[in-house]
Length: 147
Image 1 (spheres, one colour):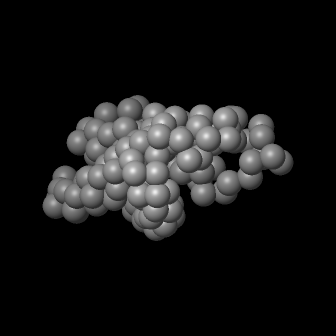
Image 2 (cartoon, one colour):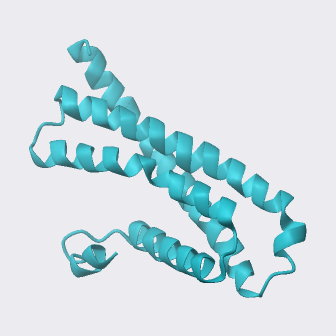
């Protein structure tokens, strides 16, 4: 988050700033109160896609968007993103509501967490659309190359 804020002029991305702010607020609130241990697990599991995103960025900065490394890292990023941040996160939201009888009796701050988790999921769906569009391009390049 600090890097994003420091480099705002060169790399302004409000959705990423919102994502990191929500994640930090949610995790700190939950850790301090030791609430929502299961949601914290699936929320953290979403970070499985991050190393592949970084690898993808590495190939882009080298100007090698048609390399096998870029194609593989893009595919792995897309698969892990869609699996963890759309499917598993979505199942986590369903699980969250199935446990409403537990969290509805917790301190009022938990309602912010529930709202923030839903906001984060909407953001993930927004990014998922972009990921699907991006992977379609990568698949076309991979087919041309015979990868």
